[in-house]
Length: 151
Image (cartoon, rainbow, N blue to C red; front, side, top):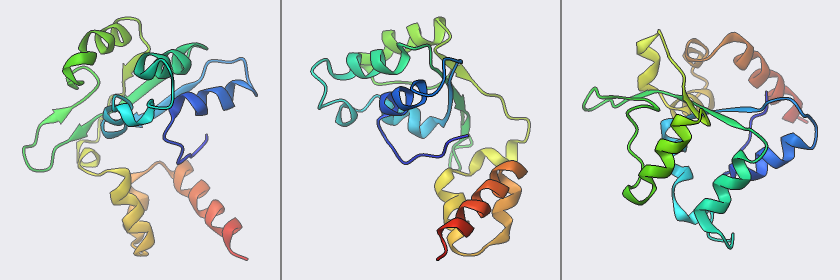
C-alpha cells in the first residue's frame, strides 16, 4: 500500500512500475476521479488530458473507484453513475468498457458519507472514531507512520 499526495496519477504509476511488473491498482474516490479530468493536472503535457491518461494506463493500471453518497441529496455516485465533463464522456465510457476504471462496492452504506478529508480532520482533532471508518490495517499503518514522524 502506498499513500501519496501526488496529484498526477501518471507519475505514481510510473514510479510503481519501476519496482514491479505486476498489475497495479489505484483506489480512489469519486472526488479524485473527478479531479483527473480537470485540465490543470495535464496542462504541462503536450498531449494534455489524452497524454495524461495514456501515461497512466500504458502499463495496465486499473483505477478502482470507491462510491460516495452526497450528504445533502442522498444520491449515491459510483463509477457507473459518475458524470465526467461533456468533452470527456466518450473517453470515460471507453475506460469503463475496457475495465481501466472499475467500481468498488461498499456494503457499509454509513461509510459512504465520509471523505478522506473528514477522516484527516478527525485524526488531527484526536477523535478516535476515525478508526471506525477505515480498515484496521490502514489505521495501524497510519499510526506507525505518525510514530516515525515524531523526533
